[in-house]
Amino acid sequence: MTAQWRMLHTMIRVGDLDRSIDFYTRLLGMKLLRRKDYPDGRFTLAFVGYGDEIDHTVIELTHNWDTQAYDLGTGFGHIALAVPDIRAACDGLAAAGAKIPRPPGPMKHGSTIIAFVEDPDGYRIELIEQA
Image 1 (cartoon, rainbow, N blue to C red):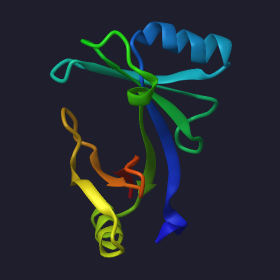
Image 2 (image 1 turned 45 degrees about the vertical axis):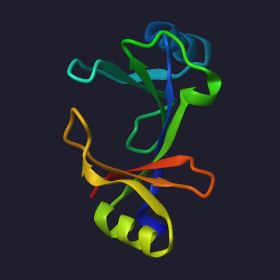
Image 3 (image 1 turned 135 degrees about the vertical axis):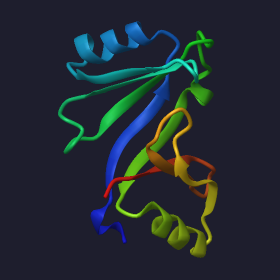
């Protein structure tokens, strides 16, 4: 089942998106790969990394418009993995005893099909269907 999976991104929540983009691009040498506002959800996603998302793992910076700062314990969001068949992946994980707190379905305020699985410590791993 894992042969076709790959790491996509790690998400962190940031209080000042422009400041964070500047840090990752100017100070760490990453490129701003894409940025999109989601007005209905009042958040913006920006993806930064050292190479194109097609073959590199990147960082997703999530800026919730109404939140200025986070405690470090709540700033980390999730790790994301690409899976070819999200329903089969979730069925297999659930059958193995994993918790699926968010079953497969479209992303809120978007159309990407996602799900979340929890590791034994409660950390969430986002599964993103990519055929």
